[in-house]
Image 1 (cartoon, rainbow, N blue to C red):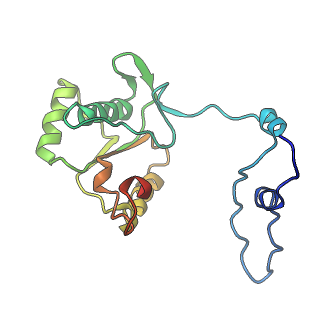
Image 2: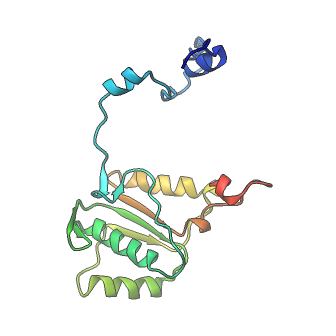
Length: 180
């Protein structure tokens, strides 16, 4: 690329924060979002942490598909596997730990029935927390999930089944996709 540098872009990408006001607490540091290619290539990144190695990593993972193809069964099975530890899919080793499963289209009876079928006589793990309600994310759902994670510092996974139930209302004129 040739040409003159764009001062507005350069200023935006490499902005220096204003001096601190001694009367105010410091603002949280913003993560860096721009690097030169050689800086980025010289960086070392830790390996991601996995709930299910090679399949579900830390951060947000989406399981999407048409209705009635088994997404809830799969999610519940993975939640049980991770809460117990051992293996997922009968072959993938997983570290056990607390799991929050928000089964927002289920009843306790249906959850019990499904878990009984998945567990096949094995004891239910106490590390799996199930809830059939959660407020929409903008109306306290985010805080509720964060509070659970705070109480379970070694949490391995949070499952929201289904996201549409906690999404909240879109801004007027915005599509659900844009709101997400």
